[in-house]
Length: 125
Picture 1 (tube, helix red, strand yellow):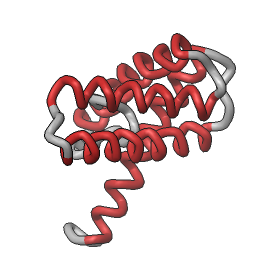
Picture 2 (cartoon, helix red, strand yellow; picture 1 turned 30 degrees about the horizontal axis):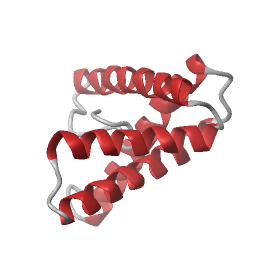
Picture 3 (tube, helix red, strand yellow; picture 1 turned 45 degrees about the vertical axis):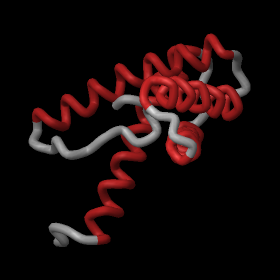
Picture 4 (cartoon, one colour; picture 1 turned 120 degrees about the vertical axis):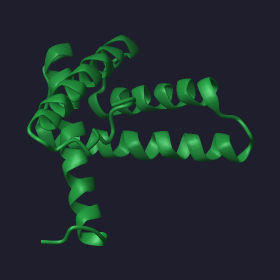
């Protein structure tokens, strides 16, 4: 089994994406009648890409910090709105519940000795 390199990076990316998708799926289940888990994974991937692009663009013009974080969060919520066809409030509720869900799942994984993962596609998790 690979202990470093591309293989491990791909596994960490995939597991992190699945955790992020699970967190978004839980949030969507609570906020409204959610669709499939696969929709949540796609939302996590698109949200992560959108956040990264906003971060790159703002960093390239010398804007960072709190403003960049708020802009990234608004773009992430926009992705949730677009993917699920809901308003700002429901998309924000998905975000809050997804964040708590991701922290819970990551906490459980840390307890069993897998502490180097993150929830890709969930801001701040």
